[in-house]
Length: 118
Image 1 (tube, rainbow, N blue to C red):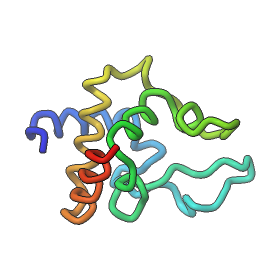
Image 2: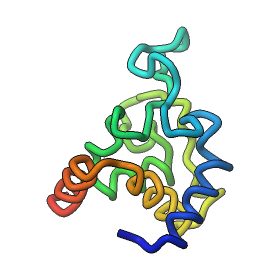
Image 3: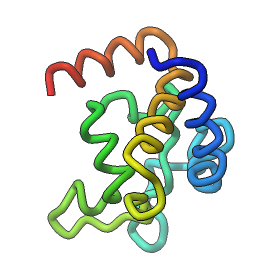
Image 4: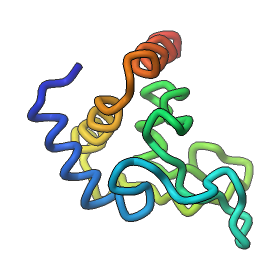
């Protein structure tokens, strides 16, 4: 687990860059599994109720850096932009460390296992 300083930095960046869509408490947008009129999905939660913890570290990092559409490919459209021009790699990792620090042990352990297997 990263140190408290990295997690605090990640929280501050999350609040400034991510919370507007993903929620101040990582709760995501309402009905996040149902497409919007645009056909795109709302921002998912990053707490234990979402699916963020199902993905390995490398996928999560790429989604934040490149945007969901770039990672999914195949013409997939998403409102999630890439932050590679806004955040450094270390800042992206700090945000992910903050998000992961909020998960219960079961979700953290699962996510660690899928990251090692990736």
